[in-house]
Length: 534
Image 1 (tube, one colour):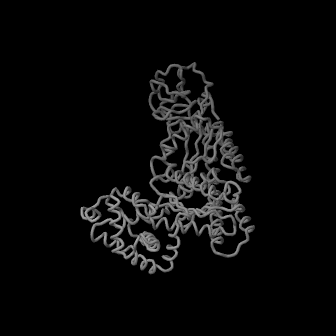
Image 2 (cartoon, helix red, strand yellow):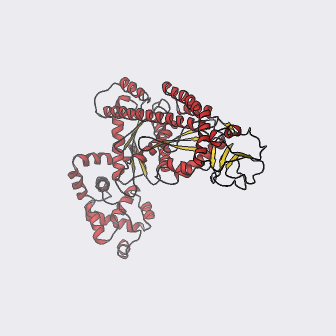
Image 3 (cartoon, one colour):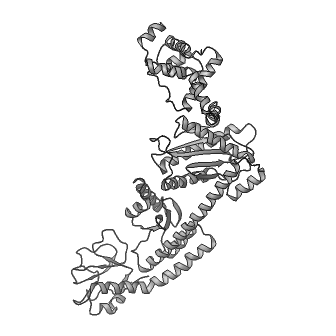
């Protein structure tokens, strides 16, 4: 809503004011008041309020000027205040006139339209479309992490501007992204940060090709109120769903007998489709520079989950994702029914999705490491609790082996999973087994500055191939043979015997699970070794 220059001159507070030039067009419209010296460009038409003389150059969008003297402004009308007029009363009267003509009516209309949406479970796109219709301008609604929740009437240019601004704000790190985004606004769009009980819950962006008049401010206020209500309802819904997902997963893992039909029905109530089975995924966010430190900071977790849910929704509908006590759990159904013999394809597709999750995590929470462990595909919905335990076991083994920030599968843990279970129940037995196999070799290396443990590990990784082991260690085959003989003398176990070789392999795995650093070769051979080998 706007008023004419004639309306401005008719206000009692401007009695005795003059107009320069006297024959200026009094029908020009005024949609808002902008103080002189405003650095950001303002869309018009507006009344430029100058406490002194008018500027020599009239800014773009200025329809008329309010000043103490006429100055030289060409054809732009200048309302010249009389000497006794109070500046604050004059501006207040103009603002009140603008508001009385449009603000109250606009607020009532916006309130009725936006609050009605709350009764029909409207989407963010619905809210944005209603606001865009009220303001006659494109509107976007962003969450506190600057993900677009809903939009209306945006052109490709608007979307490009928005994406550029979002990327710039995200480059500031873990500070309040919404606050940075609003403060940095310089693309002509009006941005308003929406604050919840304590923290920002999002941002409203409106591309309005005019300065904000009273009616626009009224609509923005109602839009902010509607957006805040929508975000509050979303928070309650998400919290409720999280509790239900957690309860469901606890029941799956409790070992209580559950029928497949019951599991499928319960999952469908949570938006998951598990009738054809699933792969379980266990994960954590960690600080790669602080071993064992899991990330539980609410802001970082929310940012990660927001991006993670988007990736899951785009790539695998019907999945169930839950976060509790620093642990991520996903039940990942296959994209199609899995025939006998197609399990390997399903596993590969799950790993591809895991890579996408890790890539999204690197963008959402840079500097943190996402570790994901995958179970085998489980066809029977009633046995998904076992799949979750497989994923958790594989993840625990990955942590023990220092594989932070990697993808790990239950299948590749091999005999580690057997040793890990023994370690959990009877740690003394694992320590004793390590002491009887590899520990003497490790101590020999420490005392004599040799590479026997690294040589043993490399030899077993190469399936007993002397040439491949020597090439990997950059040494001679005879040197490798000599070191293997020294291992036999030190440990009493001969890699040439299959039973001893298996014990040494398990001993190395026990060493890693017990937290000993992995062996690293110096990649050089001592003179003594070369002479002995020769």
